[in-house]
Image 1 (cartoon, each protein chain N blue to C red):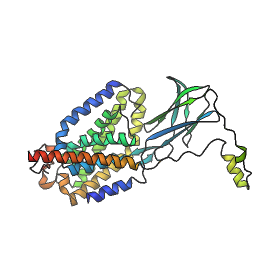
Image 2 (cartoon, each protein chain N blue to C red):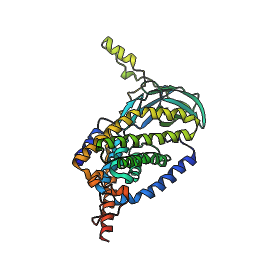
Image 3 (cartoon, each protein chain N blue to C red):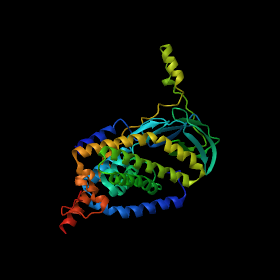
Image 4 (spheres, chains in turn purple, orange):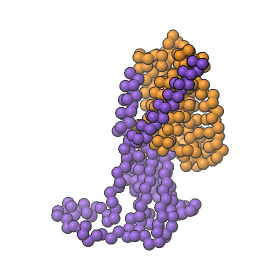
Length: 168
Length: 216
């Protein structure tokens, strides 16, 4: 009975995912594109972003409803983005902006003429150089298995210690 | 809380207090049934994966009531292990705030266990479980809020916001603990320490039997 209850609890973990806050930053056409998301891929609401250079805050803002924040750095250097979310989750990421930040130039071989009006609209919606966000989210099954393994090992140690005490 | 609490007296104090309470409750864990400890610790560990959206953020279950009801005093070190594994395996929480987190959550679990076993046994298990779940989660949340309030004026609004955001969790935990207590009363009353009205050894500090398993 207890085993079934525990199995049910573990199965419940499949659709409902972990909620660690993550932040990724990359350069896109000279702008820093910051993406903030929970471990299950959901974007937080009202996530504030603070930009620091060294220890000095130089900019701040709020990520949009997709968890994206764009910022054009004033020059080369290392910048730290600190993201704070109302539910007391925090994330930070650093990015180095080189002195000559590359600007995305469309490859002529990849330019295609849209075959229809809807395809043309689709091309217009996707800014150049901005790739689809990487796949993110998913249950950390490896972590779950490792954690349960540690618990099993500790339980075994406890059982052996009790048996030894009982025998002693 | 990692990154929000940066005052080292708070952080060190959290670890010291957690160490002291762990030392006081570890004997109860050593006497408790290994299977029972494993079940509760595993459930607590996995519970952090069960998150749902509330007010633009995400909150997760705590299962402090369940831990306290089933383990009594042994719930504190069990919660500590669960939190440590959540940090190592999922990156939940922070290394510097592990002491404070364990203290806040562990105290909630202890209160839940105390409430469940001090309430009159004439009350049905689901009522005692519901009260324990409510009190345990409430104490955990209030301790969490108090920690933020003690950290400074800047976190005052955040403290109240976090408590408010977790009110749905409070309701869910109350129901879950009540249901779990009712279920265990039907199928495994020994897990509640209700055999003949005897409180669990983990709570009363009774000596373990010859089998090495704590007497119910």
